[in-house]
Image 1 (cartoon, one colour):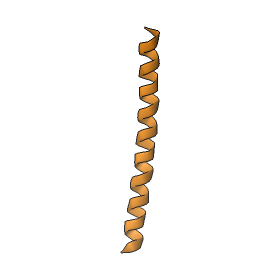
Image 2: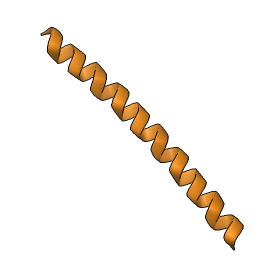
Image 3: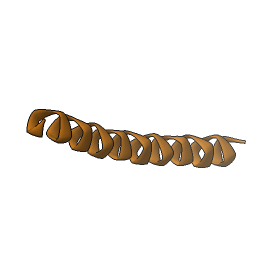
Image 4: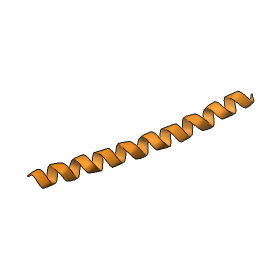
Length: 37
């Protein structure tokens, strides 16, 4: 039971980090595209 809770928490944290990195990358790409034009 404890292992399942730990896995769920790790999954949520990993998802939050992944989404955060994804948004940062997308913003950087949009800014780069806008400056190129």
